[in-house]
Image 1 (cartoon, one colour):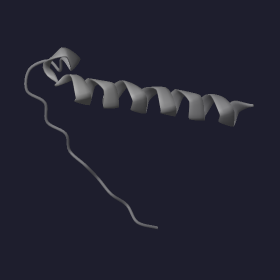
Image 2 (cartoon, one colour):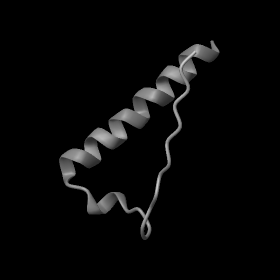
Image 3 (cartoon, helix red, strand yellow):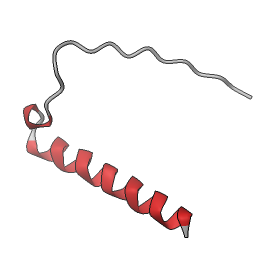
Length: 43
């Protein structure tokens, strides 16, 4: 099995409003798709 480790560094506080509108839409669509996927797996 392959093991991958990632280190994430952040500077400041993330703010979704700093993203362009198109990237905000993609961000929220991705979250919604994942929520719906998890919900369907529970049934």
